[in-house]
Image (cartoon, helix red, strand yellow):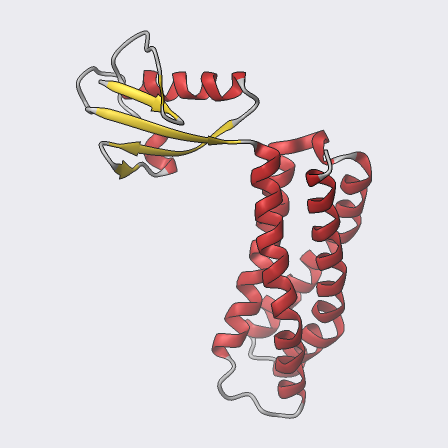
Length: 199
């Protein structure tokens, strides 16, 4: 079995998939990088399957791993989520105004987008904290600690209102809570990304 990371062949201590993955992790870490993708005989290996790779020989012909700089990975993710949040702002406001005007038909797609973008925002921040830890900087960590609780509270109230079909409550959350928070979070994501790009 042969194994590669970023087109560089790995020297394995035993010819197994698990050994290849462990070797890829060590090689990536030695360069300050992380493994972000694995291909087994040309097919993508899921994260769940990576955790259960067999240690017996001969179970694959070739494994290829791709690595990335964690700061670059986080910055790209923050930029993508920031772009989505910027686009969501006017959509979110229009949905809130539509609901407050008593028009509750045809809201499903728009509300699904609202939930998905905010979930992606939370996930991107959690991912950044997990990968970089103190590398985000003390100021950024403080800003996140301040911004996260109000967002969590608003999303909880949005979920409650949607579940109860409390359209007045949904409209209030969209206009009074999430619309101003979108501006706050957009600025925060841009600032975080800029800080990562500058180091």
